[in-house]
Length: 157
Image (cartoon, rainbow, N blue to C red; front, side, top):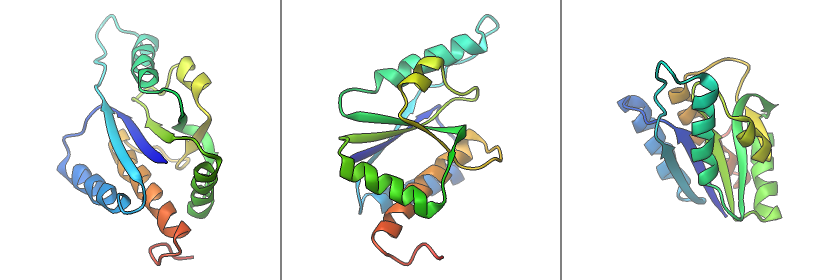
């Protein structure tokens, strides 16, 4: 199985890039992991939020194909503990999708088409985080899930 983290927009903050790179490097020991960046859709004067979400949605959906299962990081999603998130990933590994695609959307969320295509929505917290910080949190939680599944001492209960 492969896991892809699909994100909208790049980041220039070196501390975020360094943190993400550290966890991506660690994750490669457990699973085929990739991060894919969809370019920002610039909101112009004539671009409504719905149009921006629709354009981002088209780009997100264009990355999906057979065997790819879509999961959205969304503030209205289901909240997991780290342990239950690791069990979620374990079940997915057993059930057999070729690839899990987790998506961090743009600043306004997802289009209706993306919500309809998604298998689940996952919430990291009731708090609001910048889209840049969420990237590190997501990669770290995926890494943590694998250390839990392997019984390694990274996660403490």
